[in-house]
Amino acid sequence: MDDGALHVMPKGSPEMKMRRRVSAVVVGALVALLGPGVVGASTAGTSELPGPPLRQYDATVTGFQCPAEFIGAGKAVVLLVPGAGETPDDAWDNTLEYHLSQRGRVTCSLWLPEQGWVDVQRSVEYVVTAVRMIRSLTGRKVDVVGHGEGAFLATYALRYWPDLARKVDDVIGYAGTYDYGSEASAQRCAWTCPTVVRQLAHGSSLLRAVADHPLPGGPSYTAFSTQSDRVVTPQPRAGRLIVPGARNYVLQDLCPTSSAGHDAMGVQESLFGLMLDALGHAGPAERARAGSLGCGLLRAPSDSSVTVVPGWLDTSTSPSSTEPSLRCYVDPACAKPRLQPSLRARAERLTPTTYRAHGRLFLPPGATRQCAGEIVVRLLSNGRTVARRTTRLRQDCSFGVISAVPATGSLVLVTRFLGNIELRPAESPARTV
Image 1 (cartoon, one colour):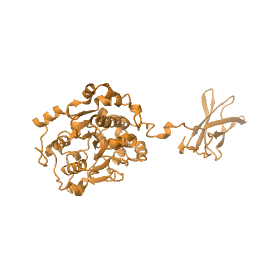
Image 2 (cartoon, rainbow, N blue to C red):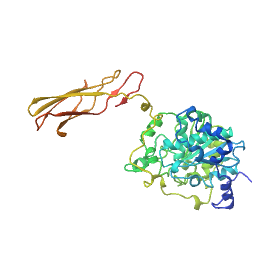
Image 3 (spheres, rainbow, N blue to C red):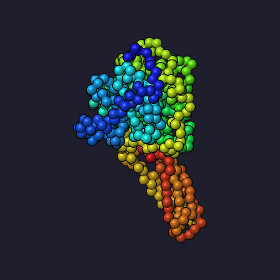
Image 4 (cartoon, helix red, strand yellow):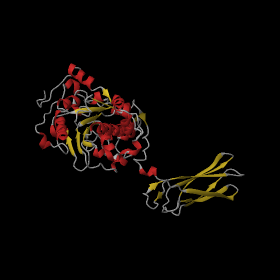
């Protein structure tokens, strides 16, 4: 019976076990039930859908699970997206899933590849596929609720796949990191760290590119953060979702004495009340409309009190020393012909042991002549370097250097350009070669 109050159900209770059995229908079984036509719309036909073509075709079969009745329920589905290092059970378990079901909401849980530790450019495709498939099966818009990385993935998907803006109603992020990234992750990634942590660190190439691609209108955006977050820092700046019409709530503004950290955000009664307000009304969560908000937990404290830094910063999982390359849809410059300068040089003997090397860097047609950088000149005798000099390019792109050579006989000249050349061809943005 739903009397409007929050009911605590201990983990492992018979009711919770029954809920898990009911919700254990994997979408792979639905594919067999619905026939190849639906699969073709989500996989083989991906290239015909708006946005970048998807590579993760297995996402359709293994990506998410829903209750058996979700197709014919005639209700909007709440898609729960966990964070890095989490399974749906870790992130939500008997909190949001159970309490939403008690209020008549249908939930589906997403499983990220390798628990989200991998390249987010791969993980986001699971979100895209899940939203498209749920929308196709139910005919209703999808509400996406994400925690940590899951909150970022929801906004990332909307930025680059334009059809999703018409398929998503609410985006609600718990302890998410967005355009700014996390300074704690940046500090941790001074050496090796998991791939996803490096990508969501403040100043990453991915976040710089994503920030230049605005979120679309249509969906409503609500973001929850906590001052006690040790994973996404600094707060509240790092947890703020900047988009017109969005609502950002800091837990301590609602519950001043709360010390809940990153992992405990999903069990906060106050945030759950705001989430229900967003799901039940047009637009994002509104504090004045949500009514009285408690400051308790959705389950027993022994099940939800998490104050330590989670596996998010654990370098033992998928360690990486470099950030993955940006895919072309994120970095448009990579999809355009790259303009390459050419280097021409020659060497001439001034004295028996002195050579002068000189030449010019030639820019492609249409580029402005803005030369900057250095030329490394090497003279080789019998395959061995006998002289090495570095000289700066002149403004006219020429260079020259005189070098003493402690050898006689024939020499081989090797030159290499080091530096930046701004090439501004017509109808193309500035880029660095």
